[in-house]
Image (cartoon, rainbow, N blue to C red; front, side, top):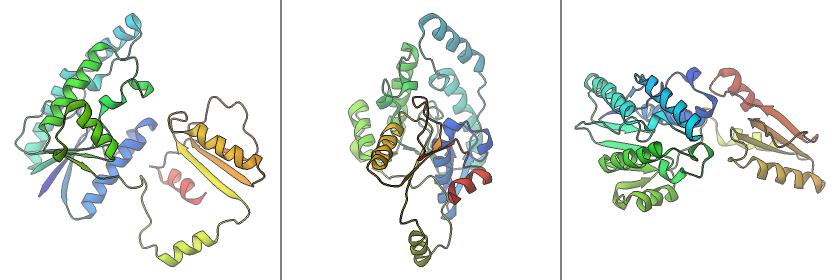
Length: 284
């Protein structure tokens, strides 16, 4: 069986990913690598070109300046149509039996092909509208397109894989997707594990940990949404109760804290897709 793994971005070149995309794009890359390591015949189709960028730029400026609302090009039908055309051209070269995408509706909204479609998502976009900051204050056009295009893709899919039961229930609640079409497969750690590590080595690593200091590490880009304040308050409470705490912050530093106490180590953003970034995370 041949799988075409479809994304709009370049899955193999992490140097082009924005830091806010590192989590989702990196997770997609690890899924691809895991399938490939299982001797599955899988090929990437991605790095799609936005040939109508001038339209999305114009609309973004219009909605921002006139209505102070958010417009997004990834929900623009004309752009989605062109992405599907680019995918179709590559499908002819790959000769895939099935199409798998970890990205959602954008690349597949207008794809007409004989191969069955499978999505593998954290959740549907509609469930995050007016919840995530970047999906709040949407213009009517973008909001309408999200519901229309997402429903279209979900209906076309042979299978929709979610990472949690909650996400699956949201698809049923909002779009009426049949329960038998949904599968729940949690994603693993968004990090490459060291091969060949045995049980004794793991025990030795645990045994070598400090018995006098508790080390806590927060990793995340969006401090507020990822629960940074909660993690910080936990560390602060433990410290105030007399425990020897080290609280390390990896990612965007919080803007609501002017001065960190001594037990906090603000590391800042690390690009773990680079050898240097990976070394910092794994050795500290």
